[in-house]
Image (tube, rainbow, N blue to C red; front, side, top):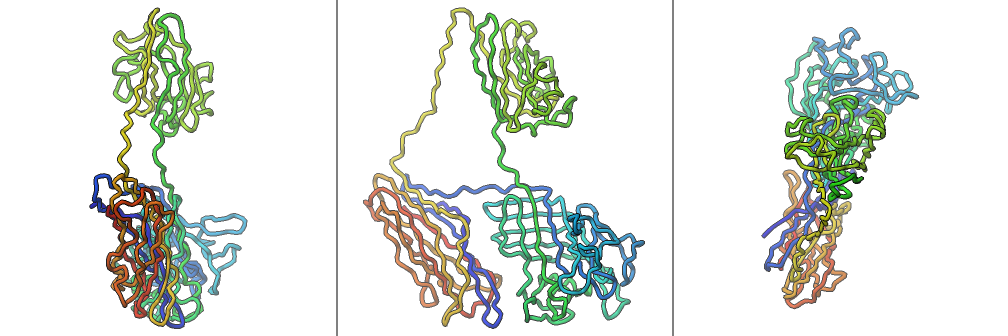
Amino acid sequence: MSSTTLGGRASSAIPRRGPRPHRAGVRIAIAAVAAVGAASAAMVAAPAQAADTVSDVSLAWSINDESGGGAYFGGCNFLSAGAAGDTGRSRVWAEADGFYAATAGNVSLAKPVNGEGMVAPTWATKCQNSAGAAVGTGAGSTTGTVATFAGGAGSVDLSAGTAEIDWTGTLTVAFYGGLTYWTLSNPHLSVANGHGTVTATGSGYGASMDDPDVWEAITPQPITVATLSTVTLDADGFQVTPDYLGVEVTPASGSAQNRTGDYWGSFPQDFVAFHALTGQSSYWYSSGGAADPKKIAKPIAVEWQLVGPPGPAPSVTVSDVAVSSTGQTVITITGSGFDPQSSIAVYPPLAGSPGGVYIAFGKFAQVWKPSEGAGSAARPNAGVKWAVLAENVDQVGGAANGAVVLGADGTFTATLTISKAAADANGIADGRYGIYTYPGGGAATPGFETFTAVEFLDPGDIPIDVTVPEETPPPPPGEFTWTITDSSAVVMGTAVAGETAFTASGALPAVNVTDTRTAAPAWSISGQVSDFVGGDNTFGAQALGWAPSVTANTVDAVAGASVAPGAGGTGLGASRTLAASALGHALGSAQVTAGLSLAIPLDTAPGDYTGILTLTAIG
């Protein structure tokens, strides 16, 4: 038995019963398993893609409006790049302290300024809005300062929807002009199954609004800075608003959480617990005050640039490789795959720029490659061209001195006039006649080193060419294949509370089945789901049911029986047939799908749940 996991999932939301719904997701990951009962059976599945290594990843965040808003004392709350020093007590910062910075290592700040765009703030402008006026304590009044962590590195797998990125650097968050401040260092991003977290090391100094003499260094500790839902990764990164609205928290100190109105919510629980040490606890969740609208988390933007698959390997085609040993012959050489950016010259006139590629004719030594340590004496040219980018043609002497254009796509076309006499005049005695390419400007690019043999024919010699193709294997005696057509999310919608259950519906991605085996053996595809798990909470697999159907059917496939969801039966908690064909069926194909339905118990705790639906093919 072999298995493969395809990237499908279903999502639904379970509302909290009561006046304010609480949204929570239900996901079904779809796995596919093939039990092969005949030698000709096969399973077709989407190939897995390896994760891409990424670097120079940026994370930009203004945290929330309160982090750049006006304060009732000290002017404003503000961000500062780097780790601020110790004031020794709870007091407002002074410019002379030297604590404030707009850049520090990988961390930089920028704020909007009307008519100028995003610019680095200064000590004088750190408390100003985009119009240059001082920010106030009212809702919507903020500097809009964004902190960016640059130079992140890690891995991204778009097909699996995962990412793991680390940054180094520190950001200081100061409230009330510096009366209380803390630091966020070395953030880490983790994304899987559409959900993400940003964690970091939190530290700083503990202060108390009730006792100005309290001032204690906080031991560095891990904190969850943000939790992210519905994260969609793409080749450039993603942007998402962290969870806040509707998030419940139990404060360790400060005011109780207010859970009414349009702005109630919280940063993560352990983040709020950390701020019991800084004295800022109630500034990170709704406490019922006028500042609650400013506490809501602002969007996080993460940017990377995925490097695509490697381009084609350098290759050369020569118009004529069997020429007369007398006189001269003009030949045309075309090349492809010579990526200019992959070969940087070390010698003038192109030092530090793409060095291009030399195209040479000669009788070179057996060991001739620069990458193997061979010096220029091993490469006696009897004709040479230098393919460089168009903007560098004049720098290497122009066409009159053998320059040809190397396209940005790595292609070139060059002509050389060759003769045996010219090659023999300065060639290596036991060398090989041929067309050679190698990197220009002293670059170390082994892939640019190619050799195409040239044969010189004496009068009366007639070359005879023949191509032997690759052997084409005989067609197999038919095969059985099945493929899940869509690996994207199965959206179950928002669960609706009924008299007996929360209900939601969706559709299984279509499964294409083809059976051309001449013996026409029986086959079947069945499915079974696991229990749904969300943290410490679960609900049973029986909550999922389906109604199979078959279309485009030329293989005598029969849809499996409908399975009702709910507590009264086993649902898809037991293996159920999706579709099948009996022995002796017609040869052909069919498309199989099923409507999915959930009946979730009403006492299910709100939260994000995941179950695994496994499809098994036997045939």
